[in-house]
Image (tube, rainbow, N blue to C red; front, top):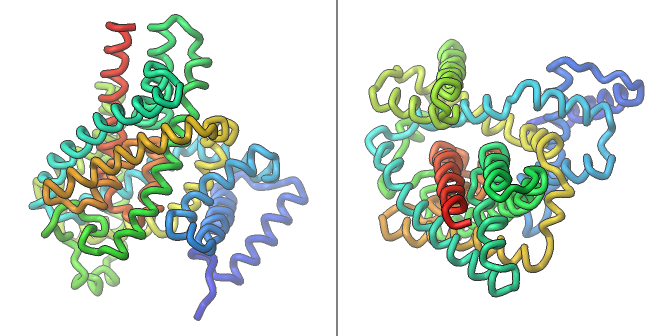
Length: 421
């Protein structure tokens, strides 16, 4: 059997290691895309492999945790070679390939979903999401207050940031709003809310990994990426043979379709302020419901989805860890009181989703995992949470929880602060 580190055959892995060391030693690491891909793949799959080999922890998302947070620590403590660090940060920020990943995952997963239940799933997910958000706000605030943090501080600086939708779409606009309404420096406000976002996302990753383990022991509680009982994908297991012979032009066409829908979303963002991934998500749903995509293109979209979920996830998480995850902000949240409050908030959000999902005849584990994405670090958190849970096909619903759910939380909070101080 061929030995691999992630997707990389061992001989190629050894050669890559030697080449990266050689470039670093000479001090001349090329800035071209081929070098960036090699670096991200090598380090991303290395970190994930370490996580997968840890007893117990590997069952609760250690691969995703290691691929994200180990690079963050290596960056903070200056262990990562400077040329590798510079290349990773520059490539990640200049290409913004996080959104290429999200576009490919969303479009691929939506086009391969059962269209008859697609709209039902989108409507139904709002109920456990809303119930979970309200319950988490109440429980989280109560726990923080009981531990001496104060109700106002707990709600505004711990509970709300967790459910605000990440950093760019949540913590930043929230801190700007706080700054204007409270007449305090925005940087100070941002520093206060960011640790809760980071630790909330980490908690969601761990709990989602634990739910994946629970689903393997109690399979009747999970649809393994499906939300509704009786739901099945258009791309059924019987079509696996067809998938293996999909025309490469259909795969390429599906990739361009995903990019086009994302660019339409980007234009919608510039014109109307609607987040690009949300606009893209609804466009993909409309295309699916209108039967505007041919079956061969749907098969191509499924291959694109599988490629990105298999080959790009861990390199992307490594890039996120290096370029977007400040280790000092994460560790700042590790006080006993903060940890208990944050874990209580996220656990309530997910637990409520589990219970309400079951009452609505949805798969409770998968519903709880979608709710977990509401406490994630935006799009980056969605990737890490769904990777830990082995349910990347839930990305469309995760985006609803993150983008729309987060926007609602931020808006309602700022309105309340404006009225009540």
